[in-house]
Length: 177
Image 1: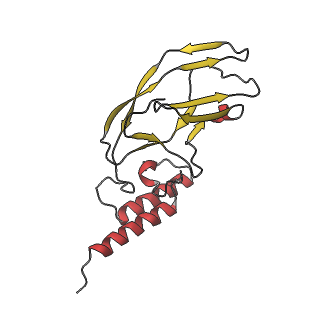
Image 2: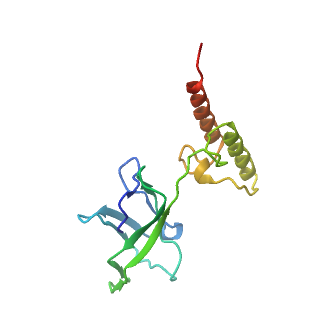
Image 3: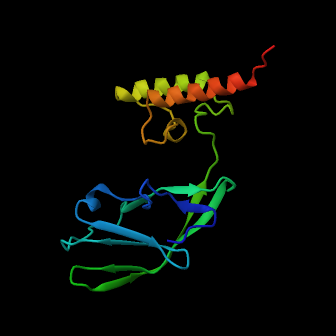
């Protein structure tokens, strides 16, 4: 995997890349990865049980990417090269290189109503969205904007943290006489 300049793969607390296999793949396969000398990320998926992938479409992996703070919004080319598949009998199959694009969008984390201000209204919308989702109702809340603590779920803690940011910024903007 060749990522565009300015975009890197996120790492977990152990320094491992955040690459996850789909649920059905993970039950029968293992994954390893490392960055090569030319900057490419090599990902190897294997099975000690000679399990095969079935079908010809669907998600195999998900990657968590981190754009640097100076990266502008837009489309950036990504390439998959040197793709080799093997079957349980060790027959090798080369796959054509694949090019695609990563669309980078800019946003302000916590600004769920997109008014360019993080305030109590954002916290209120996060709580309302969380309440709806917790009883199975659909919500228009964008989880990317609302997951303020990056833990993968939107809940009351996110709203609380948005309120804290708002309170801190309000306190810093007030002048004491």
